[in-house]
Image (cartoon, rainbow, N blue to C red):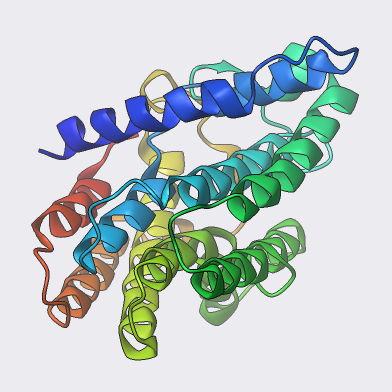
Length: 291
């Protein structure tokens, strides 16, 4: 069920990205091509899927939330482009293809990330069919989660000296670097659907739990996964002398820990009146993934 759901969403989202990131016939088309290369490269689209599924869970069945879903994925994609740069993680591969800076050069990769971030908010602001106050609230939520107190803050912790970090520091990094956009995806879906603040907060809790579990599994895969299956180098944490929960506590314990966080995420869904079957299946899929 999950694979079919993700494929269906991916086709719909990619058709929109084809339009959003179409060549313009201008002298700056190279940056648009770099953006297309970075966004249309087989990502699972987990963040926009979470947004759209929570929108449905709160009773909406139209396509009005897609602009915010695309904006969210564009911000996620920009973070990956910058994350791969030599000044950050210095990774040459992403999803089985050369990283953006390997395909287009470092300068263009930097501008590609900047463009994706900026254009994301332009697309979000063009949302139609949803009350303006809900759109404004959703955009503000998105900006906060991508900013200093969100994803950027997590990245700052990640590139710092965490070789001797305690568990609290590592979990804070997970909560911000990975969890912030997952958390906001769930919240925005509810906000756009007009859900009350209590349900939005519960959706955020779901996303936060899911985000920690997601990053724990990522750390496990970096230690034990196969580069061909993952589509990116493995062992980068060790290469960069990064401490992780998987290294610190061991793979088996961390699998149990990821399951604990996933189970806690399931519990959040019990507060919604809608059918959460697909969201539960997605959470299980993320827990069991091998890429």
